[in-house]
Every structure is written in C-alpha cells, then in structure tokens.
Length: 204
Ligand code: SF4
Ligand code: SF4
Image 1 (cartoon, protein in one colour):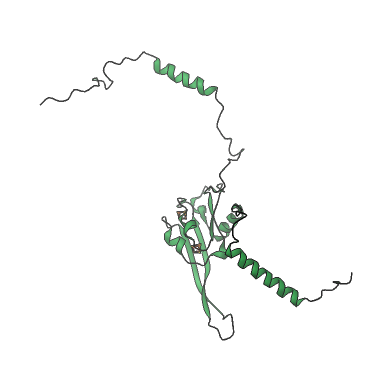
Image 2 (cartoon, rainbow, N blue to C red):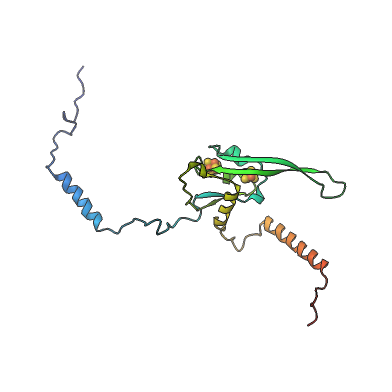
C-alpha cells in the first residue's frame, strides 16, 4: 500500500512556492511605516484615568446594614474567598407578652481579592442587596495578605459604588421606597406630636 503524497516539500514549505529574499523584512518595514502614521491608542495611565463603564467589576462593597448573615454568598462563592463569622443574640419581644427572638450578629466579613475571580456570583445571590460592585480598581498591594479586605474596608468601597439608574418616570414606586416613606412620615408625625410648640414658634 503506497503512502499518500504530501503537497509540502521536504523542508515543510509548499511545493512550487518561491520566496524573494528580503521580502519578509520589507513587509515588516511596511507595517512599521503604516502604524507610525496612525494615531496612538496608548492611555497614559496613571496620569490619565481610564474611562470605565459604570458597572465595571472593580471591587466589591459591603452594605453591612442589609446583611443578615445568611451565608448564601460564602456558600455560593466558587473560590471560597468570603469569610464570615457571626454569633446569635437574643432580642427582647417587640410587644409586651411577645416572644423573644434571636438574630445573627456579624462579627467578621472579609473577601480575599487574591483568590476572587470576579465572577459576581456573590453579588447576584445576595437576597438582601448587601453586596455591590464598585468600578474602583486601584488596590494593588505588594504584600498579598493585604488583599484580604475586612468589613471596614469593604464598607469604604460602598462610597465608590455608582448610583443605580433612575427609574422610568411611569414606573410604579418600589415597595421598599413606599415602606421607607411611610415609616419616615410616621416618625416625623410622632416627633411633631411630642413637640407641640417650640419656643419662638407662632410669635411672628
Ligand atoms: S466575585 Fe465570585 S469569586 Fe469573588 S467573592 Fe464573589 S463569588 Fe467569590
Ligand atoms: S448573601 Fe448577602 S445577606 Fe447573606 S451573608 Fe452574604 S452579604 Fe450577607
């Protein structure tokens, strides 16, 4: 049985093709000349900051007040780089004769950004809107241990989280805002009732 003949020559080049000596050099010079006349695309970082999309995954901010220590983010994190410690606390009943309740109190919340792969799963799965992406990315360290950001640092990142886009003017008011407005109105009414006449009021 004869072997199929190859189109390539013995040196691995296609048979019947000849190259002019120096043509590769000429091509390279042509590319160089072409790019020399083009506008440069180099960004002069850090003198010029990059224009990043507002939802860039730079770093994760923690809004601690919303965290119920449900542990969902830590369980779902594929890199196991979220560390949460907590303890239980007994809360007295809200009404006389009511039952005491227990609640989780956060002791530690940290993210190790040397392990994080910025998948965003923790932000997506948090049922209580306690984790947010910030576009901030300038937190490189010379010591890898410094990339474990504890709760205070994670809270600081919250100030760099961009505001969410405005609601459509025709959209229904979100339930959370309606509830917060109702609670604020109630508190304002209570405060007014406790101070019926402040000194100087009604003298004019
Ligand atoms: S972004 Fe992904 S890898 Fe990073 S902490 Fe969240 S879940 Fe873990
Ligand atoms: S999923 Fe959200 S509420 Fe639950 S522990 Fe994580 S940050 Fe806190």
